[in-house]
Image (cartoon, rainbow over all chains, first blue to last red; front, side, top):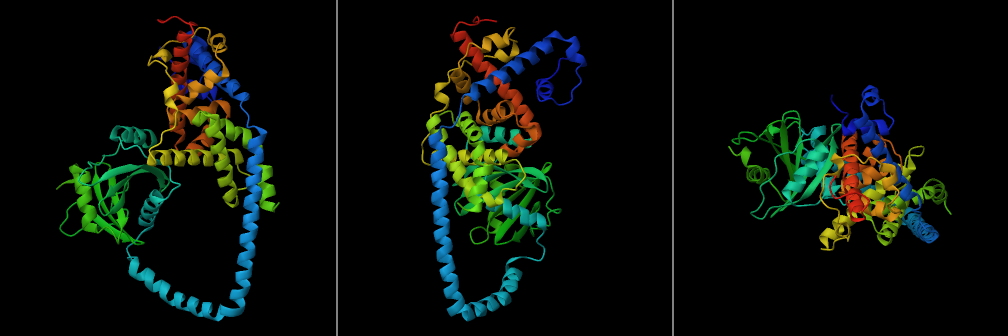
Length: 264
Length: 184
């Protein structure tokens, strides 16, 4: 007789629909279920006595009031400046705005290739978020722990970079890409920080173009970032870095070194 | 008090106890938990315009709490400091979850609340908050998945592993206290 799995028992505890036929017949599974329920109940009761003291609530309220005062002061200063600007320098601002209106499309045209796709924009966004402070960032550098983190988050372990030679993994991040959770690792290189994002889409599906003379590698640029992608098994590994710091050729070299299986 | 502050007081402040409990669960220290909660509410107020009225404010606050905790861990790592968390837990590496306690409820009543909370604090970080949100705050797997930034399937497996690990630690305490035999 196959016993219920732990996850099936958890579903029963959560009140989700499960077939209870086996439970009715199996003393072992009933006992396992009772034990899990008892642990859950004891955990709940242990925390019932944990409450924030009134002092904490007061400190938070004081902080809210202080923030509120600061916001008001900033608003007043802004208002004064707005009046001054309106009275004295609005003609200059209007002229500047007119120049921007003319220049902005030109700047975008120069910096954004016409082949850029929504997928590339998403990849760049993930890289920029990886560099931000609010991204969930698993910062352990032990490859085994990073692999475990990815296995847990993604359900598979992507190929992991071979570092050294001035390169170091800073950590891993997860993000949403085309409705799916994808993983990326952030690598410190001698020239700057790059993200290597692992997606299921092929480079072609992401609108990448072949790198002449570099079989297997595809490239693109979007919003001041260079991208180079290589396919390895069922996944594409996309390396991204700032145009000002990192060229396509440098990214390709990094992918070659980081993921030895890609070497041609 | 501005309209925003009044709204924050009305919607967010009632969840102070829940956020504080979660902070105790994830960082295991009352003093650290208080600072964490204060930071969380400060961030929440700053971002209150982004909160969608009518959605689950408690889940929103808990998500900010978790992100704030991760940021502080990252900061601790960068500055070379470590939080005194795991060192207090001395549970033996046994496989207690393979055997079932015949008198689970009675056995669990022998532990103090502090022991239970301490055992939870000793779980791996991903399991700790997930188990707390599921068992103590009684949040749905979907809400827990949103707060912890993982898929619902991952929440299920973390709860399952977390509960087994918690039992493992409590089993170790029970042996030390002579509540159960060394070999079972």
